[in-house]
Length: 211
Image 1: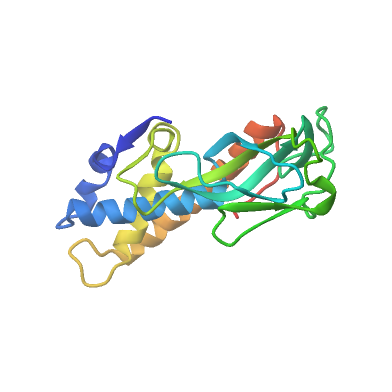
Image 2 (image 1 turned 60 degrees about the vertical axis):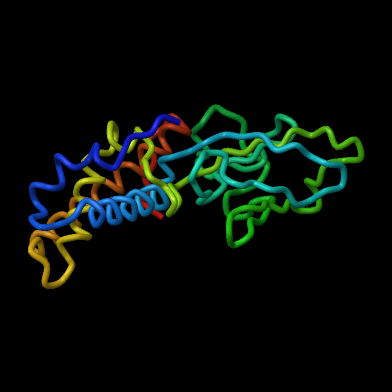
């Protein structure tokens, strides 16, 4: 995925942050991006895992550089959709084999391994294709951000970052009243982005809220 430098956001941040260093802004911009991606699942990436006969646990380390998996949004094995967190009864697509409340897998706390339930473990030939769509977020090691955050969610990045910084105490840029305004705006952008992410996957309007 294409990325942009943190500095691509400065023009809309620095004028309101008198005295703030770029390193301070970068830190809070990264935290905002991580929070945004984690709560909206807006950054999704498909990838395939090679199966092994009778093996139930597989590595699902994030497929994008300097990213982390937030959650598994969709799981398909051998072209059969087993789980889709966004599927709705109004859709014409195939209904997943498992309800979203009872996925046929568990994921470890680090979100780096997926373990299939016994009924879905690949058979003796081990030829099943395991296809996953995962929601991602930038890692703490990130020095750039996904390009779509600038071109599709710029106001969310701006208001989220400003609200975080302006809440800080005894800084030249501290303004807790304005921080509250920006926080409310950021929450609205989260709501919209979460809904948009789900509509993008299901092609229908859903009632949803950020995680």
